Amino acid sequence: MSQYYEMIGVSSYHKEILEGLAEDEGVRVVPVNMTRQITPIRDLIALRQLYKLLKKEKPFIVHTHTPKAGTLGMIAAKLARVPHRFHTVAGMPLLESKGSKRKMLNFVEKLTYSCATKVYPNSKGLLEIIIDQKFCEASKLKVIGEGSSNGIDTSYFDPYLFTEKDNSLLKESLGIENDDYVFIFIGRLVADKGINELVSAFNKLSSSNEKAKLLLVGTFEEELDPLKPETRQIIDQNKRILSVGWQEDVRPFLAISNMLTFPSYREGFPNVVMQAGAMGLYSIVTDINGCNEIIIEGENGTIIPVKNEEALYQKMLKGYRGHINSDPVMCRQLIENRFDRYYIWRAILEEYKKLELS
Image (cartoon, rainbow, N blue to C red):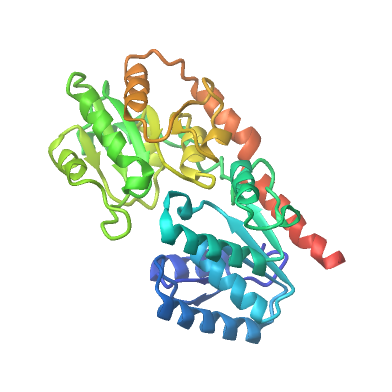
């Protein structure tokens, strides 16, 4: 987009990420401290900062992503009278909330969309939820392409970039033998990603199948959505579960794995499932929006019910025993054909360019 417009990136401050964006993309960046939790005083401070920034810069378009940045960004943009206010919806934490908290989050969601001039759910399932919940009028809504917020760079997520020697060295460093069957999860290690069910299912599988390994790539978040104590205990004690923490480059870990396990409770349009597919992996996913739009049953993966540990165990066991016909070439081709990021980028650019003619 910086080839067509002057871009300003606004985000909570993280030195490596924000400064890295400025360097890599050649754009200006502005830190505004936004929390992921409900923090009224800090939110008001961030809102004031955003308003002052937008009044000063007078942008043609403000385009927000993530729930908190969306709410604060859309309110600030409307107050600053920015003519074009776009919000991309990439998941809804409120779907797992109940009671008074759910009512409050529903109100915030409606407020965000009411301040936006265009709302882009990043999956068809999310669009249907927004309409069903009456969060905004259907005329504001549009899914870009086949879904996804940003598509995927299939030239970057390519298994042929990694040699057998590369893979063997990484396996050796992790204590994985060449004939082990490796399940992988990538993401935040929290309850609503289905980690409790995944760890329990794998613990059962590994008790009688010694060549199985589970590779967890991601960080624990004890404050927002902690795992059950028994889940943490299994992770610590089961020697076949390998937790490697957050990784800037997940491709080497996908390259040494056999199958992605992604039993999340809710998603917008998960990048991980597309990344795994581009790396030739068959995926086990839950029947939620995004996942059930990326996966075609029996071709590049299989879909199970949400929060169903037994179904997850049975599919993992079937994969481990070689009873799933997984075709790495097909898995990759299905991602290339539908979600290559250049297609998504062009579609977003077209949305922006339309405004110049109006």
